[in-house]
Amino acid sequence: MKIGYPCINETLDCTSSRTFRLASYSEERLIDLVEQNLACLRRILEYNVQHGLQFFRLSSGLVPFASHPVNTYNWQEHFKMTFRRLGDYIKANNMRISMHPDQFVVLNSPTEQTVKNSIAELVYQGSILDLMGLDTTAKLQIHGGGAYGDKGSALRRFADVYHEQLPDAVKARLCVENDDRTYSLQDCLYLHELTGIPIIFDNFHHECINNGEPMREAVEMAAQTWQPERDGILMMDYSSQAQGERKGKHTQSIEEQLFHDFLTETEGLDMDLMLEIKDKEESALKALAMAKALGRLK
Image (tube, rainbow, N blue to C red; front, side, top):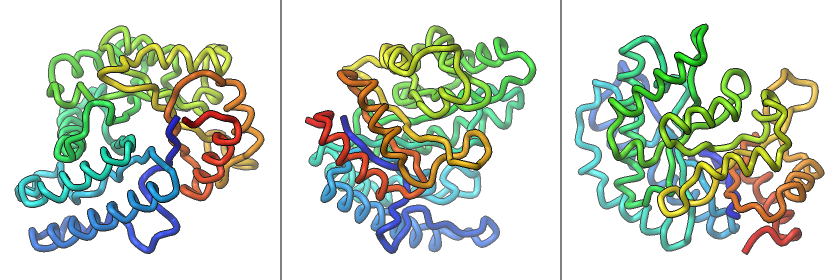
C-alpha cells in the first residue's frame, strides 16, 4: 500500500499550478511559469519521499493552457529533460503517480466540441506522464460524465468515444471513478465491460450512491478490473463526509476512527490510497502512521 494526497502541499511555500489570464498569454510568460511549476513539483516530490508518502496526484495545471489552441509552443521539447529528471526521481523512489483532469473533461457529452476539448486535455495530461517516462501504472482518472436523461445511452456513448477517438497512449492510462451523484460502482463496472477500463474506487462516493454492496466487496469488485502488469494494483480515493455540511462534501481532516475501521474492513486487500482530504499532507501523514501500526505497509 502506498498513501498520498493530491496536487497541493500545504507545508511548502510554492504551488505547482501557477497560471495567468488567457488575455495575457505569451510564450515568455508560459516558459517562466512552467519553470516555476516544475521546480515546485520537484520540492513536493522530495518532501513526499522524505516523509514516506509514495502516492501523489500531479496538478492538471503544470503547463498553463496546454490543451488550448492559443498554446502552440513546443513546451514538450523545451522541458523534455526536466520532465525526464522528474520521472527518474519518481521511479528511483518507487512512487506512484496519477492525474485527474477537471470536471470539464466529459467523454460522453452529446456536444462534439466538448468531446474534442476533453480528448485534447487527456492527450496533454497523458503526455506529461509519457515525458516523465512513467509506465502505464501511472493513470489518468476521470468520471463517467453526465447521464443526459438516458444513462445507458450515455455509457455507450462514452464507450464509442473510447474505442473510436482516443489515442492508444491515452487509453493505456485511462481509469474511471465512481462518483457521488450519477455513476455508481455498478455503472462503472458496466463501462468496464464495454471498454476494459479499470475502475478507481472512491469509498466516499460509494457511501453516497451504491447498490447495496458492502465496502469490502465493493473494493474487491473494483480491484478485479485492474490488470497488474499493465495497470498496477487498485488505485483508491479515500475520504469521509464533512460533518454538518452538504452531502458529498469532503472532510477537512481525517476521521481517524473511520480510517482505522476502513483499514480493518479491507485487511488483506492490496491498494494504493489517495486521500482526498482538505488538509492534504497533514492527514496523509496521520493515515500513514495508522497504516504502519496496523501492518498494512511493506
